[in-house]
Length: 200
Image (cartoon, rainbow, N blue to C red; front, top):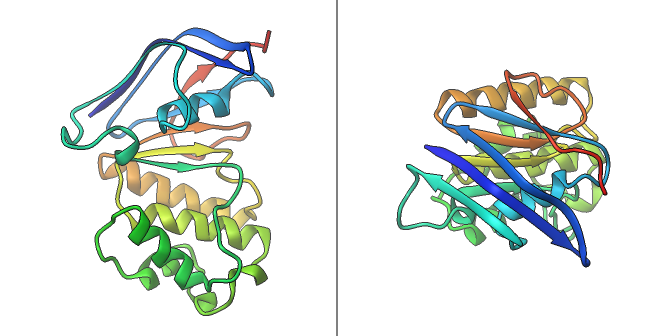
């Protein structure tokens, strides 16, 4: 499987964020997107996730499921944790599993993998920022998708949480998945780097 972009351009609010961008990542690879604030790292992830439309160029996935679009084969983990405060931790995970159309996985297994199983029945409103991030990471595990699009994925995680996520990323890559991550910090797994220049 290979995800590639050719001459990709992005315009937001009438401003060209970047243009003519080429990139690629194959199964088992992680691509770290780096650059100054405002240079378009998040915009690139949102283009791949289908949340924005490129103003030019193309983004293609080769070797994936021909019956599904690229966004349907991708997980997007953004800055904000998409959590419903009134639902319990476990209910949040079941909601996303059902919404994303995943197999009937056991939420308890995904919560245990991020060391959040002790809080399964707790309303998500009571979670700390780091725990909210762990719950968002559990969503990556509850519904299996080959492409992980990660925007500053270790934000709010303590040292043990960062180490745990490094292990989960390594497992995902070993299983043939690929990762594209916008980050200012090391991911802890082998990466290739895509640098986006200064914002105009």
